[in-house]
Amino acid sequence: MNKLVKREELGALAVTLQAEAAKGAGVARIFVGMSTCGIASGAEPVYAAIAAALAEHKVQNVELVKAGCVGLCYVEPTVDIQLPGKPVVTLGNVTPERGRQLVTEMIGNGQFESPFSVNDAAFKKQVRIALRHCGRLDPERIADYVREGGYQSLAKALFELKPEDVIKTIKDAGLRGRGGGGFLTGLKWELARNAKAAPKYIVCNADEGDPGAFMDRSVLEGDPHCVLEAMALAGYAVGARYGFIYCRAEYPLAVKRLEIAIGQARELGLLGENILGSGFSFDMQIKLGAGAFVCGEETALIHSIEGKRGEPTVKPPFPAESGLWGKSTTVNNVETLACVVPILEKGSAWFRSIGTEKSPGTKVFALAGDIKNVGLVEVPMGMTIHEVLEEIGGGSRDGKPIKAVQTGGPSGGCIPQSKFDTPIEYESLTALGSIMGSGGLIVMGSNTSMVNIAHFYLEFTCDESCGKCTPCRIGNRRLFEILDRIVKGQGKMEDLLKLEELGAVIKDTALCGLGQTSPNPVLSTLRWFRSEYEDAIKRGQKPVTYSILAEKCVGCRACVKACPVPCIDGTAKKPHVIRQEECIHCGACFAKCKFAAIVKE
Image (cartoon, rainbow, N blue to C red):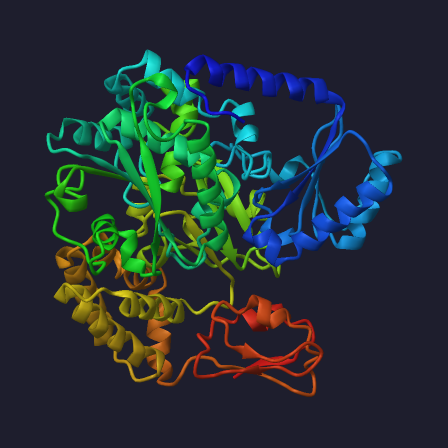
């Protein structure tokens, strides 16, 4: 495609692409999920098998699309088939052989048989805003995004709206930051707009470091242009001409697709100088992070971009006033930016009609742990935890009651089953001793030791602390030592009071938001599962240990897949062994084993 130099040319391109799509109403489309989860599960040979079958049968009027992830990670590889005039059929657990068979069925009666077929139940309670395009277009083709109305909101803003109008729309929508404390996005943009120092910068925080979280990665892999367009809109709103996407290097596919998207947007003149002839210029680059958890905190992230050690600084001043190289910097995470374009398209009232008064819109969650339907879901704010876990997540894998969930990553808290009727909102989760965070939702089964869970997360926090402030560097280490004594059967009842007192001090005195929330796993489990701490102390011994009986182990590897650490060694069809020094005693392997090969002592 040639470079677009005027707004009218973008509109004409979109009309042309939409007309071509309408002409192709008789064209069948096959979408193969080719995000990290799909590729890891074997999507590439499935795609190749389908392509080969289409060529072999000389099938016409079929478009084969390398798409992103629709969120059904538990049945990858997935294939979506859209026949003319019919709803999309989603098939899971597709093998190359099954892929070839799908082509035969498609050109036959159009009836598909599969070991897994998704019906509306998987999506009926979801409202997809941030994930609206994931799995439904090719993330490496800008034409697909433009066909869906992409970059039209940017064009409208540049020619019809003042920067203040864009900010007002985001403010009126009540969009809150989806990556942490839930600060109002429109207010953040307004503060940056009012800052006097120039130049100004836009930063996308894609440093997704929470264990079990993969929301941002999936958006970047499945719909990168929505983030680029939102960053350009933010730049126009606050008066910035340059942006950075800070993405961890452990996301190579996301980085690759971002690079492709940026290059395509530049080629069309949607990034760079004088965008669409508007006089507004905006460009960006990717900055790779080395994987430090603390760099998810915005001031530490800013220092990392500057080439300095990733350490947080005291606020105020906030980045909107003094950020990158001392200049005004607006930092938003991926999911927050993914909501910007739909708000500009449909209006603030539309966004406010979803969710709750204080928490409008939707939230993407990564379901992980002891849950049947592991994957991504996007639900309206205000939906209860129970609805997400049971009606969308399918309940626990062993059918037993779920004991607890942890929200907010290592800085979040554990919520007991008795509170599962709580609506998912920023304030309601905080009241339970947890946080919304970026959206990781870790499910814990009935055999989970909550003391060991707190021990695991606190150890992670200690390892990831940047060490700059004393409360986090030393306070969390002392907190961990007390908890470690309890886990090892050396605790005393007075240790529980010490945990509470020290945890409260750390929350009040740590330098950054990560340090201030780091005691949450300990304090929340003490609050809701205190009897487990007391029992561990009374036993005066190490917690339950798990071992594998070699004579019963068939090497099915179900325990390996269930282990969250992982700490189980062994090859297929041969006896496995648990590395006791690394085991966190969660019981996931015990619950998963169908051959009574794992015993607890």
